[in-house]
Image 1: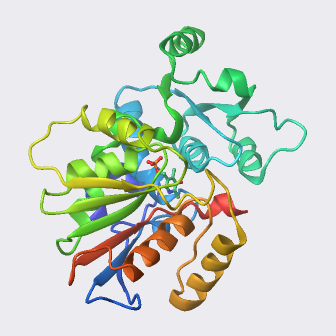
Image 2 (image 1 turned 180 degrees about the horizontal axis):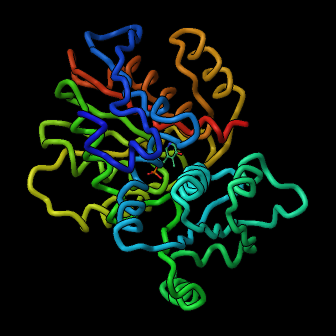
Length: 302
Ligand SMILES: *Cc1c(COP(=O)(O)O)cnc(C)c1O
């Protein structure tokens, strides 16, 4: 795929397509594995956040929308990617942050301030209302000209961005493995991949049932002709969202030394840890071709 077909990607200097590199996992069980290096798409804009945000950014440009409002925690890769894109595209961003970091902003929040993002700190109780229709309506009334983007950028218009990822692939896979938190990335992959492929989501948080429901709701927004099979693995969240026991941090260090691929513990570390475990257990069908998506997120580890 040629990047000149994506004016927005050119404007932001996104390096398309991202590399698809072989990964020699041991014992191999005859598996042939590759990594889609979306962590290399851009030095600032986190891989899957670019894939999910391009739809909203294109819509904002097309409709001359000059103000976006979105949500996230103090380390959010979504807000970080969006803040940078908005600064470059000269769109105003208001970021509603979970918790009051006023006295001690994180490195992520310092970047947002430098990029001119307006920061609004919400209490954890208020933040919990972020997807309630009443809360959204109030917010829209306070910012009548703004476009609201949900947490993680996971909404119907995020899914086609994953289609551009799938179109870049050099071969067909039996499995595509990716992390799941708000579900947009997984839903986009499922819609874009054919039914011969199984998309395996690795849950980043304790959310059995809930995550399946999120993904199902997002899938319902898309036409369904030929979509992939899918499943979510729930045994690799390491205690919950952003929990990082020593086993996981040691894995990230070892993996980088072994394969020269950087990982962070919140998303990519858990995903590759799960992938290696599943390979060792012989989880996949013999001789499968497997792609693991490196979703980026390395800024969050600062
Ligand atoms: C946000 C994020 C995810 C989770 O993607 P969802 O679409 O929210 O499920 C995975 N990896 C990284 C690096 C992320 O920043």
